[in-house]
Image (cartoon, rainbow, N blue to C red; front, side):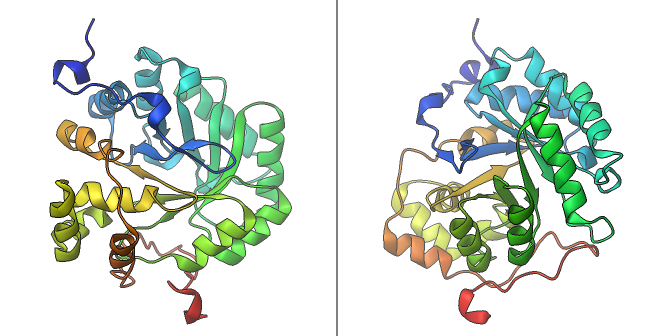
Length: 292
């Protein structure tokens, strides 16, 4: 029986062609599910898996773990072929809550483990050592294969990795937000970078430099921006789309390569534009190493 992707004329991407990132071997292009709920979320995840996405990203804060889990369970893709990430919400960082909250996530997701469990945001009200100690414990119990962090600064990443080795820091990163300081820190420590909000919620799509490069390759601006990310050492990304057409386009980025000049031109677009900056954000790192 043909999958929805095949019925639309789009053959799934061969899984073997998806490069992996970091010690956890995370597929470099993942499907994000923030702001997707109910049947929209279920259908989007199902379609993404049909297309060849093998990394699915959710979080307790998103309120859609059950929808994501149901789609994965119903999919023709074996659970062992899906790299599943979820993130802990603030109330669940403490030693007495973390394991229970993780098991609750697993119940909603319909699985006995996730592949990656992240601290969603730094929380100065709970000692980092307490949270990471509890995360290391659930990893030892097989509830997650890897642990990591999200939205951590370079100093926080170093502290975390000294407490319990982490696999990844998931951060906002796109052509308009340079992350040189964090990227250098991650590479020094041997951990992966996962870029979220990779298109700056559409802001970069009107950029003339990206448009010029896209025209050269016969690609869209979005495809060039995503390619720029996954072509960097140790960097992967998660991209969310409620559009089936965009999901198909976003995974079609492995049939061209940006040259060094094009990579540099895109990197030079950084201007400190941060899309996700809630009041509980940490004091962010500067964009460039020479800004220190």
